[in-house]
Length: 314
Image 1 (spheres, rainbow, N blue to C red):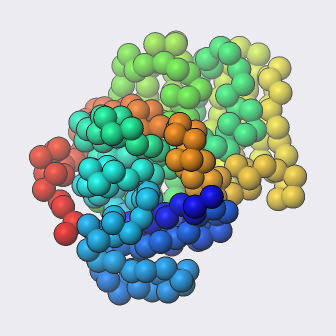
Image 2 (cartoon, rainbow, N blue to C red):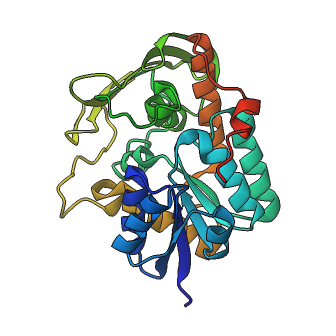
Image 3 (tube, rainbow, N blue to C red):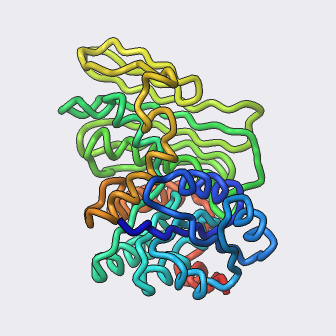
């Protein structure tokens, strides 16, 4: 079997994580690293015996598929160019910075018969432990995602940077649509309340200016509650649902032990089988839409589709 030639666009912190996971994949090679800063691309490429590029077109010619781990406001431009070049694409969350841009990527990939997946890694963990096993939607979901300031992802709000993780999980847990949204906050910290068509009330808090990290989800059903701490990897369950609480390194599945590696594996297998096995572009576009509705309800000033389209990486 010919090895898949995979490339990483974006040689920052998350790009380096993805490069390492691709380098460890069976049946795949890290064929290229792109960054508009050639020195950053070279440092990451050398680490994995790959090739550095600061010319995106040349980079695309060297790979079969692309993992985009660049700043969120460049996801659309890089994704659009990769799809136009006939490449399968994995884009870190969020898929794009607006619903219009996200849907354009989905439509372009579908027209060309290409795989388009998104990096909602928390979904893999929750799926693996059985968090989505219940057939009825919960009555209430409470999400907290607070982190210290890192200086990364400043091009988008805390909603697009952090809350999108929980929005993806709420969508998967309920299968509902937003009937009403209220939100308040500022660029770095936002609180939102969503009333969904399933009758579920979801409250979410995202902050990226805290002294310590706190990432938790509480899911309330009529027969009890499930509480999951994403950092400590602890879970309590008073419902009748059978939820796995095995998180030990040796016993847990790859999706729990290393969701980033699991996502890379899913992407490679999706390409080989010609079917989306991870979080699809269509699902991710819906999550982007929810995020934008929250930003609008909070009165946040965010870039328009036109502004975002002008931010092209040469």
